[in-house]
Image 1 (cartoon, one colour):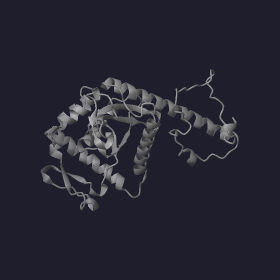
Image 2 (cartoon, helix red, strand yellow; image 1 turned 30 degrees about the horizontal axis):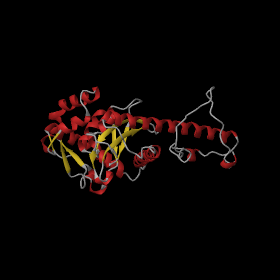
Image 3 (cartoon, rainbow, N blue to C red; image 1 turned 120 degrees about the vertical axis):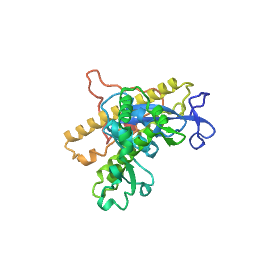
Image 4 (cartoon, helix red, strand yellow; image 1 turned 30 degrees about the vertical axis):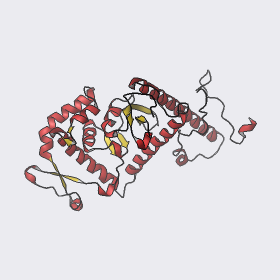
Length: 311
């Protein structure tokens, strides 16, 4: 919610009631740390902004796989991410209704897809992609160099809901990538791909829950009138989130090391399920202090057998 008057907020009764608000679209890595975010006016589709979040991340290595929900998906985004070298892996709604696509060879010859012939009935045009290939590579180079923003590009690739010839070529290229994604999702013999997407999205939702708890003082409201101030406020929230996650991670690791030293059995399968997103021990009232001792060691761990009230 943005309770102050500003041009950088939009209405959406489902999320904001009678008020106006913004969307905080952010990305996290598999260490649960925030690596980039943008402020989106109102609740516009994530697919218009997801490119900017990834390409303008704050730092760290480039992600190999990008897991998102359905709102970040479009055929053109699939094509752009594929050419940028990313594995785009959105969780798509209505999976049984999704289309599988096949390429047609020059002259209209249809390739044989074996057992998939009955379901891969939608055809892609290799000629359409080939005719726009040079411009497609130039567009990707401009995205890499930052010469054009992803949001502006996606708006230019479509006119009144219809793609331009270049946008149609990206969409066809993206449908091929989407078909590979769907086949991996459908594969009954390999659950690792589906599981990795589900785990990453679950982590993202848990981090948002922690963010809502930490954003206690302002009740989740942005009180800055300009986009720069809103981004600063949410950037400070992201910094505190990363600090909490780092603090939790260090003490979880210290607690596991102490248990092993004391001879307690520590199952690696159980360790793999631990998350640094626990917040029951976090006091959201007052000021935050992340303190280590002067020699770099951590403060003593609490004996779990000792009641907190007796300490």
